[in-house]
Image 1 (cartoon, rainbow, N blue to C red):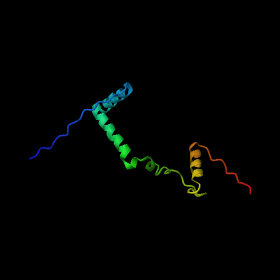
Image 2 (spheres, rainbow, N blue to C red; image 1 turned 135 degrees about the vertical axis):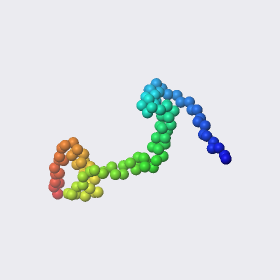
Image 3 (spheres, rainbow, N blue to C red; image 1 turned 180 degrees about the vertical axis):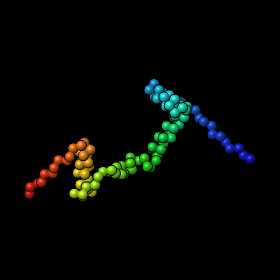
Length: 104
């Protein structure tokens, strides 16, 4: 029967300024773990953020308009700026200014 080889942890030296060292120590205390484990978790989180396709900034904007009300009076696809502007103004508790008709 072959024994499974255990991975040997490799020591890494990192230079931290005082504020980073304090942050590392505070996280270790708060998470009730070692500073090494905090750094491992940080590497894992950074790796997920960088390489996970779902976290790509462009993909994050998909669905950004969810929750916006739909307008019956005009085509939101054609006048999306107007729709977002009216929704933003409505979030301020103000009503949109009445549209002026252009004379032709």
